[in-house]
Image (tube, rainbow, N blue to C red):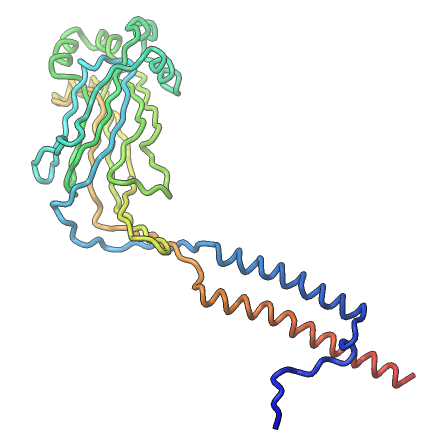
Length: 312
């Protein structure tokens, strides 16, 4: 007993013909485009995000806060950097990479002044200051708790200029600044950092800019890659005029302050693509289905031609 696993050829296609060539060419063209479609669908990455309660963080876990801010109208000796973990009353650890202050060049100063900065109330007085400017850059290492850090006028400078009167201070001191980058941990690059390349112009020239930051942990999962913990920032901004600081007796010096806190929620960002076995199954189904379908069509055509010949 002989078993034939292959179907018998369709009558009319045993010999080469124009119809057979057209059907074969059509099969290959359709299969090629469907193959490209399947490959495109397989290459696409599906992104899913959901919010979940964060696990209790390790209070000993260290997170790096990167900062780079430039004050184009002030000398480095006029500025100080203060930082503290408000939740644990522990100073931030800056031993590994301390925050440094350096004077900017005249070219950098002119570039920053033209970067959408609002001039001081007396532009001539600001221009008379000459090629000043200070760039502050570094990394603060902290544990995963809330805290704040501030760049402001020193106590001596603030005490000296405050005695000259409000109008004189506004002409002499301009705490407008350019935030090149402020980020907590490794920033989640799929989202825009609101504290990157941010010009902060102060029309009055002097005052306290307060940024309130919510740091959102983000669990980043990718195909064939290790899970990473990154961070996003949501912020609100508030400006306190110098007159308000003086009248209220607030001990804060003019400058910029960042208050941050870690949210109890976290975002899981998951990227995935179609399973490779599912992709291969779809691929073979598409290619095989095309030839089977066209085989049925050709069979019907040949039977129709044969029936028409019998009628003749």
